[in-house]
Image (cartoon, rainbow, N blue to C red; front, side):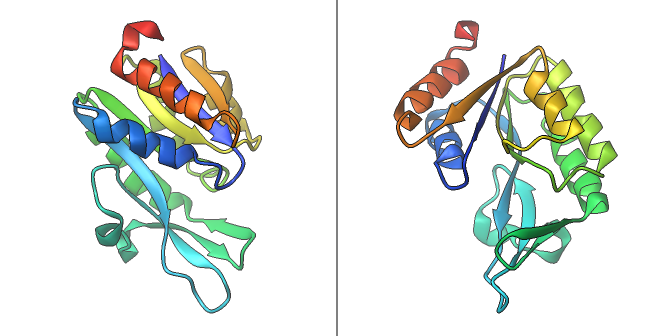
Amino acid sequence: MHLFLTGKVRVGKSTIVQQVLQEYRGTVGGFRTILGPLMEDGGSDVFMIDINESKELGCRPENRVARRIGTTKYEGFPEAFDRIGTALLRAAQGKDLIVMDELGFMESEAHEFQQAVIDCLDGTIPILGVVKPASTPFLEQVHKHFHTTLMEVTEQNREHVLREAQERVFHPQYA
């Protein structure tokens, strides 16, 4: 019932989610994470925004959930994930589709947010999401949840994955 895309950085996972949503006609709730403007050290802030909100409006201090330090190190802010992510997932209840773009290691200490994700996985609303291919106890719960199908996206298969995601979202009985 839930489809999560995984794969290397910049392979097209979030692009697939956005392409599916462009044609989707039902109601959508959930979140996406975006990088803010580049800083002098090569890092940037990471923001969590409503899936229906534009990137330009989303880079606000109250939406900051993490910071990328340089190009490879991250610092997550668990209290921000708990506050913002939990609220967005609660607001998604009653929608036709929940989007989670993306789940990763930065929320490893955000226990309220993690519980909200698990509650959604246990629920009946289909989820289209992106999950890092990392291994943390929380991500393993997502990867191995009995309602979750995990599909790896590669440069070679991304068109196939797009069609599969469209089939699953547009025709849930197919899943």
